[in-house]
Length: 486
Ligand code: BES
Ligand code: ZN
Ligand code: ZN
Image (cartoon, rainbow, N blue to C red; front, side, top):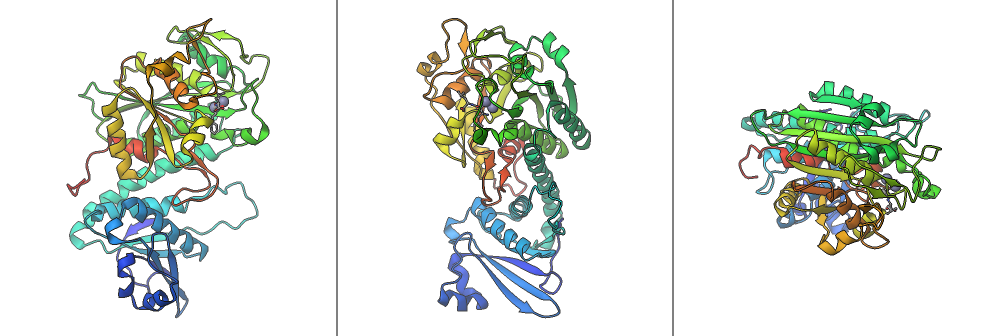
């Protein structure tokens, strides 16, 4: 729970105090430490001072680095370290001091602190029956000037909805495939739609067949858990014709099919719906905050498994757009489901621009690691909008080249396209495969195979699903901050 209220060390068990590297010497307790070089105020450093009164009380100092190098992302990361320290100390009531400067207004502070604290404290331990679950921590944001309380309260509520969106994404992705499969995912989305205020339509195999989504079905019919097409609609600006289309890859499990993955690569493949989780989480945040934009999101949810009805390498399949596809590898299944989902959202939902989000290629992880999402796009202005939003959230994105030469790599000799472009440039050819179905609409392809999952806690990202890029998708459609500066 997060509340705006001024508190003292006597009213809470612990205070979290941000300190600039250049102002460490202003703090008495830390002055001593400075000489011992135990706490220099560098970004991410944490020092906990303990005073014993009625009960143990803590002042947790967090370094935020030099004032001139200050960024909201650095602040969020520093806060995350403090949050972890408080959690380790089993603190139940914590005050967090704002750090207002030219780069971060009061509202920006409320947002950064709320995001960092809630996201860093997230865990996924619901299936552990023996561990003691920690009591909830109540967090007070202290130092909000009286005149700015109302704005700060609005900002807090808005941010909590965004954070909930990220946590929805993390939870859906962290759940194993025996819990979240296409049908149960669709049920979850229906529930979320009711809570947040967006419309949900779920289509089963017969309708998917009638729509001609042959590529989606080729993947989806391999499993006993039948596919679902999940459509979410939110019209926040009914007078406008503009509709942003979000498409999320929703493989609730990817064994690779007959091009079977080795166990080590397979074991986390319940996370192959990171794109779906992200667009569902973003829709929830957008609807809860009543953003004045029209958004439709689509998830073609299915499992890629081995059975008598699986598609096989060498098959030639159709697609909703009418293009034929030669299957060279059944593990390159995401692009098949996305091709039809993109066709559906353009033809049936009449969107005017498209963002697809997908855990599409291991090559994205090789190229950019776990911190930067790979982008393929046909529209530089759209890409600039993405980068503008990313600058606010701290999530990072980088565009890969897409000259005509790359397009040749996915042309087949026996069909219109092949689903693998060879060993090289795997992230680009996968993206361009989807690009073949977007027609002339502005389009961004976000390959989150590297960024949707981390093996260890890093900053406010927690082990397992990260919820990337929910916050950036939200930032792309939100209005400007009330402070007028950004
Ligand atoms: N879901 C995987 C991509 C992936 C890999 C996501 C690692 C997260 C972590 C995707 O369906 C896949 O298997 N892609 C293949 C494509 C190849 C066969 C062209 C890959 O990346 O190896
Ligand atoms: Zn695959
Ligand atoms: Zn996959």
